[in-house]
Length: 272
Image (cartoon, rainbow, N blue to C red):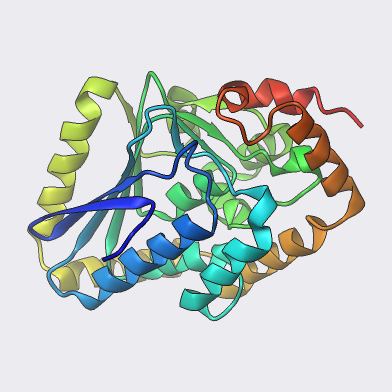
């Protein structure tokens, strides 16, 4: 595979996939394209059962979408789903026969959060992982499926808190709310996730597929719900309110590595 933003290592039936898209792992066209390449190849290869996603960057897992390239990354997503929607790309991963695990260190916000939510399991470093669904700060509904995932995982009240506050949440609260499976000390995270991935991979793929299909029948929202959220994001991101607030955020350092270390504070300073 020719990849610009991902590093892939095979260990038996497990692919360990490292995200490496400097300067801050923004979800842009190149990363979307590479994710599609990895997913397609893995689905076509009967040897592969489990995908483990992690980041080379200790401060950022996937920061969020590149808001300067919305049209371009949506066009890349269409190459897998037939529609310009990362929501449908993420849902494809959830529905895949492959078992996907997110190993999270650093910040995972916006579509980064939606990507890990689309993975089957999520484990995070207690000391460093930071979670946020911050689209409401721009007057937007999350477009990658967060409303569908979070409401089912957390319940109505907590999902509304997370999305409307646009705040940062640490791994302990994320675990308590159901955002992730478990928060672990950073020194234990790698070994725990690798051991789990290897254990799952030693069992029959047919079992993975049927268990996922039945769980998804209960817990995964229909395609049309993901599609509608994506459409609403695409419509509203072009509106004057969203564009004005994005410009205000950019003026304060949005989409720069240093400023986004404390993004919750930056978003609270945009004003009207």
